[in-house]
Image (cartoon, rainbow, N blue to C red):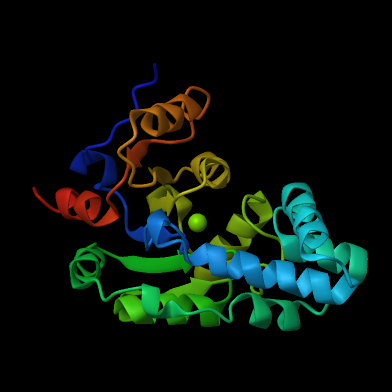
Length: 236
Ligand SMILES: [Mg+2]
């Protein structure tokens, strides 16, 4: 079995001055399932665009997601879709599922240095979500899929572009993410990497997440509690 660390060792983060956070299922937990609404909107967009039944549209949407990293990339390449129209529709969701989270805001605020959101979503989506949680003010900048020229994580070029634009020294950075594959490039760039796992109690799911890590040498830490993890970092 792998030995992923779950309790942060402050020494592992002592050099970190650039804190980079994914948004969806990272800054808010997986069980909120905000993405289910986005997913439904994307399927509806595809169904209307291509005049398909919802089930057929969903299959195509998933095919594009798996082949291109995002549904949008597949739609742009195969159907010349206007990305702005798609993104606006995809993110027309109810953010009231997100509650203010002052403890998380305080924990982010206490981190030394700059804080960023690096998302495959959009700036308006990140602002709405982080705003609903009351943590938006803690971030220096948001790097989104538009800034990435629609090339989503895990493409290494997207991390390079983010780092260049913000003059981030990746050797002094840490990345928090819920998708293991999105930590491969950050690790290669010298970043400290933390994987957010869903809050689950079923042992079998825990076991599955731990097993993923057998080959995931690019993951330094695994946590189910971002706030607790950041708070523990600050206890000297
Ligand atoms: Mg995510």
